[in-house]
Length: 267
Length: 345
Image (cartoon, rainbow over all chains, first blue to last red; front, side, top):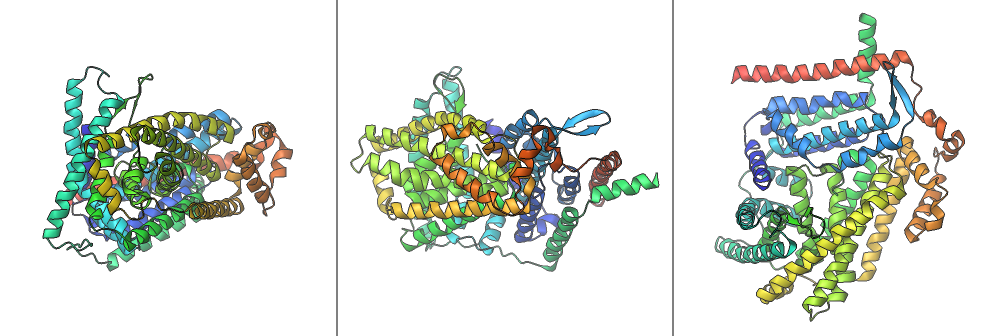
């Protein structure tokens, strides 16, 4: 499990450095579009299902335009231990009012609100993962800073991200060593964990001191600088504008109903 | 217990984001005023440490299940509340992006639930007074245990409140609380022991590290109780604001859950301070325009269907046909773009 989590981290990072139409967009544009998308999806009332379906266009477009492996992301979405599923499953149990009859099969309000939660879960999680798969994390940090996030928090994020891979690799070795010396659950108790975490902590602090020395010798004076510059271009404006227009259209108008009625009239 | 986007309403999500962003800004200002620049790499690497340490599972005695570290308390104790909060927030941000824990809208709630309580309530109000300055291992253990439990109980209770205010779940308040609090009592005890273990381990082997960290950190715990209460008051007002906003703009969700939660006659018997506070919130919201409790009570259990738009067979069939067509069209667009890209590459 540890190895696969580490692999996922690295793989998402690699994906974000590809070069496609979507990857080339300014991180700010993608961040703003994703946040607006999530808020719009979540704003639908409890029993909405049909209205949510047009919103699948956004992840599908990103998947295909940015060439993100669909299977990898879907697997991650399905594997994510979700509080939403756990809490949502109570809806069908509690709310048993029959509100709908689908081809003679009665459907309760609880199942409808549960399905609505699942659709929202899928859309919001997928779009968050797509954001990171199409935008490098330093890019997102840059966008956050440009949008007014305090500098200390942004440099904290950059630092954490930089040393994440170093420390998880070290931890992976520690865990492997522990697992090889323990039989079943023996040796995996809290006491052993405390010693492992304590040792890891001491090493980390020593590492921080070395890093600080290295930074000082390279002229660190309390700020982190980035060489790469980003520019909010016309294409970014078009992307954000189109997203907003589509979100408004899908939220304010009953697209699904209109298409349904139209097709019924045609056939 | 990461809160999830799908259970949130925009108003609740935005309110907690506002609270979280305000706290990040406040901490950043505090740190900027008097921070040793040595802290920059230390905070960064300790964030990575917490992240990595969370990935080590350990077995919980007696249960056979496995748990992992949360980390909020360790950070608060070692770095102090301001830096500890910033580091915890950064860890949760990375998790939200890379592991999709909860989602981006819920991130505000998650930083609030797992960062504010350990750093600004459990640490200054419980850990500091209990552990004292001399700090024997025993006192540290007791202090971490109690503060770990309190922080997680508050966090779990926040999850309940956030979910209920959003009105996407049917779970009634009582059941939800009874489900969340005992589970997190266990998690809090484990977290307390682990926190105490790590701090005592570090203190025993390299005591100067904790001391140097505490001398480098600004205002070691110098948070005034008054300020904490003012903060909580603002949070309460914000939450109340979100509640009323939601209630007036989008009646179905909240009306339902609140009516279900407070409509129960057995609640008053086991009322605590929090329940009374909630009740007064309910009373206030009951006077809001378009907030029609009576209609529901009068309609009774069997007739709740009134809030659901009346279903006519014609529209429901066209709805299903439309849904299928939209999904097919979306998929088709994706496949066509993929095919075109393959060709051009």
